[in-house]
Image (cartoon, rainbow, N blue to C red):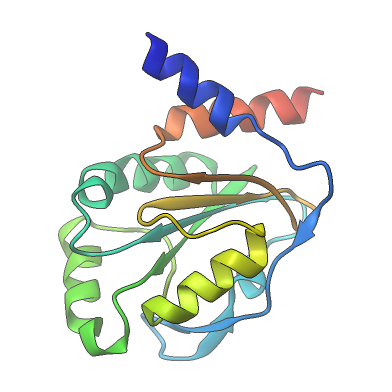
Length: 165
């Protein structure tokens, strides 16, 4: 119960000063085109950025929650975007992760050092590791950051609270 409470508190942290989405560019896993996270923000919708690695055990166990979350919410309130730290040299491994887990949301791929730079620029915080989640509000500002496992239902509850306030 204490672990659940801790996650609710941590996920509910909202920054006092909005931080815009960084313009760092990463390769779209599917198309190969260089894109920014901002390119995937849809006006009026929340953007959940899941930063993952194919060899991350937590990422492997949690991604299905975000596949379901994206399926439930993409038409209405929120979309999920993946950003893998695998790097272009492990593009095949990243694609195998996407295929194995039937990931239904777009994914970008970057070199670890570039993803860390993006994370630090976006959050003004140190990089901890994967998985990490950045939640951008419908206006494109960073609302929440969280490193480590986060049940998708907690993010869904957070979004409902924000939409009701």
